Length: 77
Picture 1 (cartoon, rainbow, N blue to C red):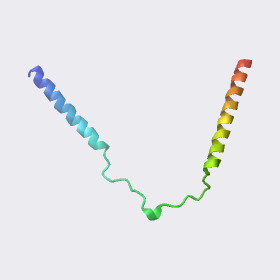
Picture 2: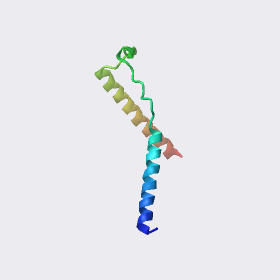
Picture 3: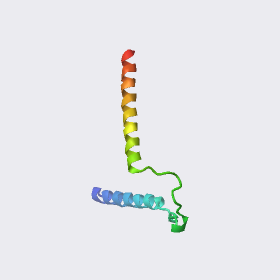
């Protein structure tokens, strides 16, 4: 068998193995999507844009405070 024929046979074998592997990944049953009547309303409170901005500012400030406290604690050691 020539080198060209061996490369061609190897490529066909690799393509066959790839096809077998990919076909094994596919699920025959589709995912069940929720129907419109199954979707429920959000029952918990949703933040208003102003409340969201305040929460983000508060978390940013807490992060900065935590970072500066951690740096000072490390420098004490």
